[in-house]
Length: 94
Image 1 (cartoon, rainbow, N blue to C red):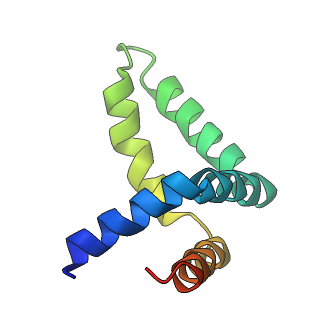
Image 2: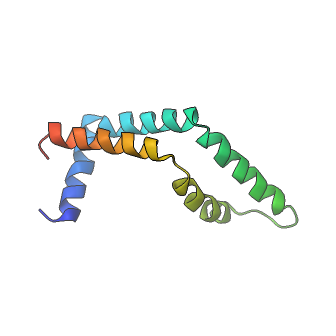
């Protein structure tokens, strides 16, 4: 199975089993616990405040915040989610 097919199979099984929603909720909890949400909220406020003389477009905000958000997810949160996904794959013989 090529990597693209493997990824699609995992994605489909995660959705059908409800595991994807559980993992999303776990991610939300962990990010809230470590203060990541507040950090992103503060970055958004700063971006909007700095653009007070011009209109702020959502696309511009997303373009600036998304890379910072991805980079700032704590390694332990990434590791926990990765372990959960690996466990799911192993238990479902994907």
